[in-house]
Image 1 (spheres, rainbow, N blue to C red):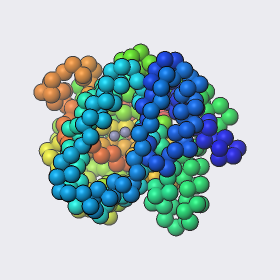
Image 2 (cartoon, rainbow, N blue to C red):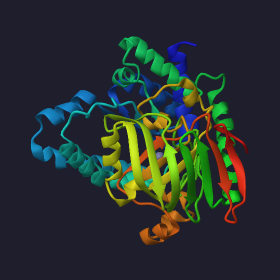
Image 3 (tube, rainbow, N blue to C red):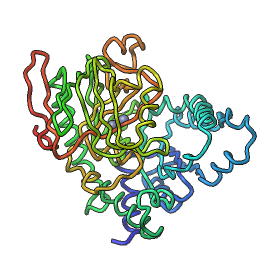
Image 4 (cartoon, helix red, strand yellow):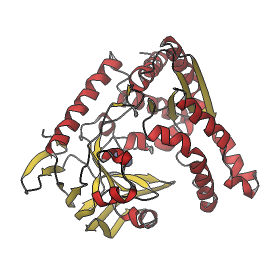
Length: 409
Ligand code: ZN
Ligand code: ZN
C-alpha cells in the first residue's frame, strides 16, 4: 500500500472507530501544522459520515518558541480563554473532538521552568471548562498521532529526516492496525477483547495485585470500589468511541496507602525533556521511601517531590508484552504510544472514572476509598516478558493474571 492509501485508512479509522462520528455532529480538530495532509483526509471522511461542520485549529512549533524568545513577561500568565470557552460551547452544542498529537517532545526543554509553569497554569485554568467536558466524557472524543519531522528526529536521531519520518509513520500505522486489511473491523475485535478483560477483572473484585520479576517484588493494593477500564467507552451523549488510538491497556486505581515492596522500570521515560531510565523504588504503605535511577535520577526525584500525592500511585495498568507497540521496540517519547508498550504504573493523580460512581463523590470520599490526588500524573513502565502478575482476593487466595508478560486469563 502507498503512504497515501495508508493515510486515508488511518483517517477513516479515526473518524469511524476513534470518534464514531454521527450524522449531524460538528467536529473540532486540534493539530500541529505538519498534520495538514492528515487533517484534510479526516475532514473528507467526517463530511462523508454526515458531519455538519469540521473546524481545525493548528499549532505551530516555531510560533510557540517565538513566544518564549520575544514575548513580554506578562505573556506567560495569559491564555486564550475566549477560544477555550468557544470550544466548550461547541461541545455543549454536541460537537465531537479530535486531538492530533505530534509535537516535538523536546520543543520547550531549554526554556525557563518558571515561565513554563506559569504558562501551563494559565492554560490549565482557561482550558478547564472545555477539559471537564472531555475528561467527564460528555462527548465522543479521540486522540491520535501524526508523524512530524521534529518528533521523528527525536525518535530516530541517527536517521536522516526523510527516513526517520517514513519509519515513524510506518510504526504508527502498524501500532494502530491501520495496515491490516480491514482496520475498522480489527479495532472492533480488539476493543471487544479489552472489554472481556475489564469485565473479568471487575467481576473478580481483587483486593490486590502482586508482581514478581527481575528486581520487582511488589504488593499493590487496589482502591475500594475500583473499576477497571479499557478500550471503547460510552460517552454521556450515548456515542461509543475509542478515546485513544492506539490503546492496549486495561487500568484501574491502586490504593494510595497500600503499596509495599520494590519495583523496577523496564523502559526509559521521557519527562519534560529529560530521559529517566533504570528506576528502582521501594514503597512502604503506599509511599515511595527509597529511589534510585541509572539515568535522570534528579528529574525523577523532583517529579515525586511535586506534592504528597506525587510519591504515591494513581494508576495501575496491565498491557501484554506482545502488544504491537512493545513489538515495535521503539521508544516514541510520547505517552499515547509508550504507555501501551508495557504494563505500567503512574505516580500522582488517579482517575475518578476508576472509582465506582467517582464523578458524584467528594474529594474526601474518594481519598477514603484510596484514590490518590496530585498535580501530576506520570506513567512509567514496569512490564516485560519476565513479569508475573497475580490477582489476590480479600481472603488471600491468588490467581494468575499474567505469566511471562502475557495474559493468563
Ligand atoms: Zn495508562
Ligand atoms: Zn496514565
